[in-house]
Length: 114
Image (cartoon, helix red, strand yellow):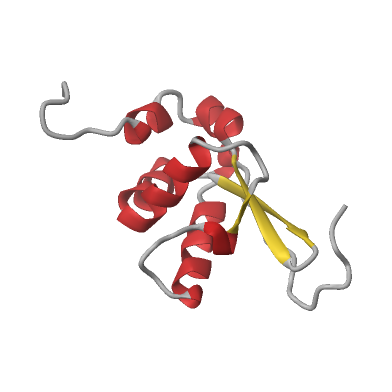
């Protein structure tokens, strides 16, 4: 149930079915957003608040990154008290873009197969 006592606006979500492939690719191309998506993919749903991510950007930039991820249909957010919790919309995104998240979530480093 949403927290109605909060003064901030409810987050606006775009369903992955309404996302063009260019929007999805652009959202995943940014290193900070990719890091956020990877952390969410490795965590249980609704366990990460926005402030729990350790990324090298300020609060305003982090908010912008989450806005981009919501607009790309990748992330869903909900308010719980003073925290905004996040989940990766893996199932919905995979239905729209099969295999795309698997590709970008695969950590490639030296010696990794291409």
